[in-house]
Length: 104
Image 1 (cartoon, helix red, strand yellow):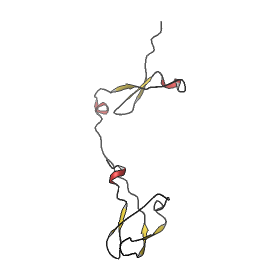
Image 2 (tube, rainbow, N blue to C red; image 1 turned 135 degrees about the vertical axis):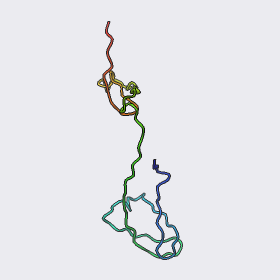
Image 3 (cartoon, rainbow, N blue to C red; image 1 turned 90 degrees about the vertical axis):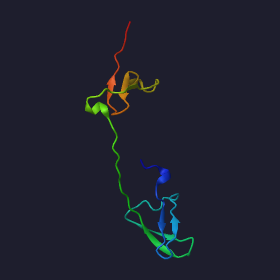
């Protein structure tokens, strides 16, 4: 699974071929329809960078979708969310169900 630590936030300078770090702190380099200007720290030449997004997917086993048992876990709630006090969910597939209430 991709995490923030292994994203590639750099681009190769087209002039000197050094890696140039891309800083997103000001919101730059997120819009795929815009080219952004960047200056190489090594050769000090300016060049344009085009952002491009791609999606990747990872499969995960989910035995309960294949006839296995659900792994039920109670939802924790407080007075602000009373509708969740009597529900639990499967930690694998996310299915929700009501917990039978015991009354005296």
